[in-house]
Every structure is written in C-alpha cells, then in structure tokens.
Length: 189
Image (cartoon, rainbow, N blue to C red; front, side, top):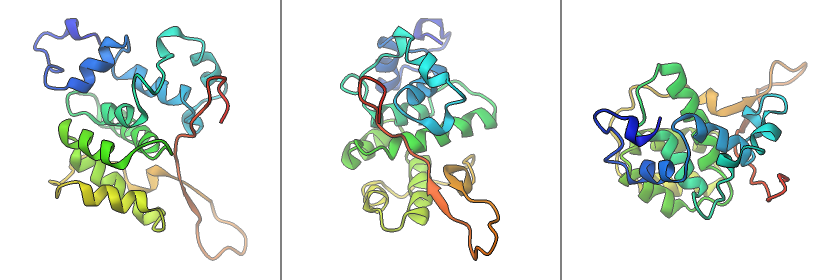
C-alpha cells in the first residue's frame, strides 16, 4: 500500500513508515521480503531469498533503513489491519530482525517508544530472555522500555524459536532463538 492510496492517512503519525514508503517499499509485504533478503533464512522458502535479492526495490542497505527500523516498522500499530495470523507472522519476523547482531539496544528502545509499539517489543524481549537468559540484549532492552500495557494479540513464546522434536533419550527440548544473520552485499553471512 502506498501512502497516497490511503483514504484517511493511517500512516501520517508514523515517521518511520513514511520513511519506508519514501524508500519505495510497499507495506507491509516488502518489509517481510526485505528481512529475507537481509538473511532471515528461517522464513526463506526454497530459493525465494535468491529471487528476492534480484528485485531492485528490495535493495535497501542498512545505512538507509537499519535492522532496528525494519523490525519496528513491522511492529507498527499504524500498519493496515489484517487478520491475526498475518499480524503474528509479521511479529515473529520482526522478532528475528530486532535480535540481529547489528541492532543497537538504545536505538531500538527509542524507536519502539516513538512508534508506539512498546507492548509487543517488551513481550518479544521477555520471550527472548526466557530462551537466552545469558544474552544481555534482552534484559537491557526491557530496562530501557516503560512498563507496557497488556498485549492482546501476540504470538506464543514458542513461535519465536526453533525447537527440537522428541529425541530418543533426550530429557528436554532444545530451543534456539530465530534471528536474522546479516548478509554481506554478495548475500553471504
């Protein structure tokens, strides 16, 4: 959806979504595709990432739209209303992007506050801390954010992780946070 197509201008309150649109990206679909292009292999179906890397509109470098901005844009309450499954899928993709190695916690927290998506970011950080208690990123993120209101629609914590199935002799399930692995310009990790 382009900004000018909006009859009531739901994007006018989001400077970040204005920036995304000015970069030529269509929202919300191109945001998800850009995450795959940038290295989110978990959600890359087959060779979709290779195909998407050929689309000029998706060649937005991180110096023009950071991974923190990409993640928060996907979590923006100003995006078009969709069914809960589509919203939760976008939240799952955003969770993987916001945990990328190049995301600055202070920038991320400031963006979450500015874009009014603190509740879902706190939920993601809480889930991340449960999966990766040794990762200071999650605790630092929650410390920088205000106490959230209740999140009414959020993915179950297991939707942010890759989990092992039932293993012979295993005493517990292993969980690994799904995250974006930054690619170099050639598309390599």
